[in-house]
Length: 432
Image 1 (cartoon, rainbow, N blue to C red):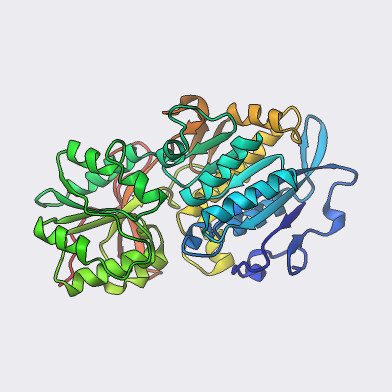
Image 2: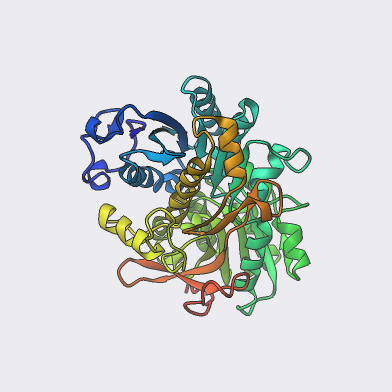
């Protein structure tokens, strides 16, 4: 098996690729003897935001691909025949235009049999659009299903080639409001949205958060969207203060949230609750805000406490997280579980395909997926929309940590009470 990657990736390969072959400037490859002799090769394209502002989402992708490389070193068997696997991994640099360009190159020049855009709307959607255009089966995750479907016109014209598993905006709303109801507030919510694909989806008045928050019994105040990487949130903070919003909700990324929170403190705006998607997913994002990060809350996609096991290795979620910590010296992050689950679906699809080098055959196999993975069961037949499967979501709050500066604790299981119990009760922010 061969894993071809971007040579500028920041990941420490020596800690990730123990036991693998030497690393060249552009290619990681197993020793030739480890490959199945005279076997055919299946090419899989993988596009990840390994650098740029979305790099925290892509941090676990290269690591997981290296683990998969170890697992299928001798190829995979399909219909009694052995196939080598070649992963062509590309860095989209957090740029949707580059993601589209890379996808087109992988499809037309490398002739991949299956495509994997690893995470975020900005990478998933342009990659998936290229796959629809050229007829390549594609599997993605790590963005709400509405963000994958609606901007691409999927509500009117269901997709033929692109499949996606994750939770939806209706689920994050139930999780957010579950946490908010556990705190004594006036029910007024200031909504924070960036002017990008995610912000326009989450902030959409028809299917996004503002109208749904109001329907849930809260008052929602949504000022103008902010430009990503802005250095001035005065307009948003002013509206939140004028309307006495005791809750802040929405979506943003780490750098913008740090600026927003710093300016809130400077302008004497102290909400009781800050529940923001994306930026509050990662330990490093919380640590960047220092003591102001403690008590902030977010949706939780995956934790080591998930009760599911890998269909590839039999490992528990805790064992996957422990392995990451041992190999990298870093605290686990939520995308780790989904990085692994995506490969569970890919390899399961290939093993069930009538011809794993044929795109049509792989599409048929992908559509028929019914697999128990590290993030739950993946079955596209039961989704809220064609080609969609929903997965569990919980509410989490960052508290002072034991082994790390902060730990993410489950504080709400409203939507999936049978999967996980809360670790602790939600508490209001204390910026005194």
